[in-house]
Length: 255
Image: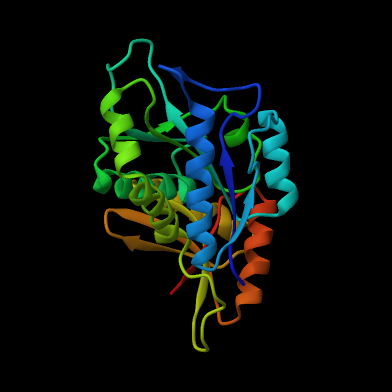
């Protein structure tokens, strides 16, 4: 079963977002959101858009659209801005907290956009943004360069197709394949990815106390906490839903 991804074009309608020399953020956001969504659809993912036209919805309504859809992931697309033009340059991705799947997803997108030519400004935590706080699935907000920096606008315009592909690739790197997989696959539900082993141990103990079979898997410089060894994708998704209902940020992986 293909993953469902919500693509949110930031701002819209009466809310133009940032403005620079007549250029409106809402227009860049929509154009890029549709391009990213199209690439994900071509790759076999289910895509839900919060808007496909120049219309306004509140940020709370965008979160409600995502939650009603039952989607697996939420990706909001924006352009950045600064108090003074041509001061900052680069891409950054915002998350409610830099942990688990959302942090992994944000880093993956940033790394792919860096290959296109943007400076990688890293992952930033923002707890006050409704689309990150109120969504019930792993959520990220991409700031695709500064709207009031001429160099970033040139990168955006001259490499637009590559930027859309880079964001889609960054998502796919984490979300993984879209199909049900062949026989013999073993599925696990990942609930956390940590730099510190002690943090992984804490989550492991918490899961075991709640009755889950879990383990810590070393992944490069990170420690992943994973639940189960499921031979059925349906069983894995059932466990994933249980964990989500308990408030865990989850990702299906194959062992």
